[in-house]
Image (cartoon, rainbow, N blue to C red):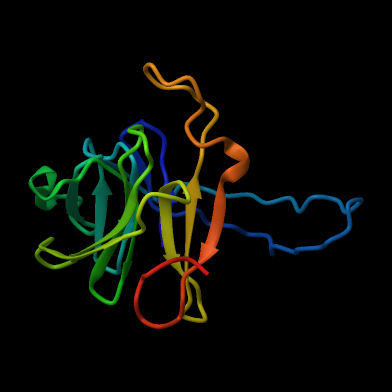
Length: 189
């Protein structure tokens, strides 16, 4: 699973929730009160976008790099930069079955292009790249659901960059998608 982080370079490992979460559709429902406590924290300077996690490691995501840290020792294991393969803006990561899946876009360049980048979790070698072309928005997150389906988010923004007279995609075009179940990543459903 992935977690969004602020620009602060501290990762909170886990929260210990003591109240069950109840989801209701009633607008008048009272919110569920929850308490939590910090179990541990790590100082990881490479975190500027997000973090991917597996059983033994954290994978700190920055615009063009991934840094792998051991959970137990809190020590860096491996760090790689991917500007040489054209990385522009890594935005999030999830780790599944020994692979780090990274949402990538050319944000804030126009027109928007996005891709899914896949890395070997052991070596951080780049394994695959799947382009989503020029459409949809900036690919900002990817995750696999419990049923095995893959989901992702394509963000659009109302911010105007540089000399462009229009907003970067318009926030109303932001989409959450389920990818085709073919084992490939050709396009969202």
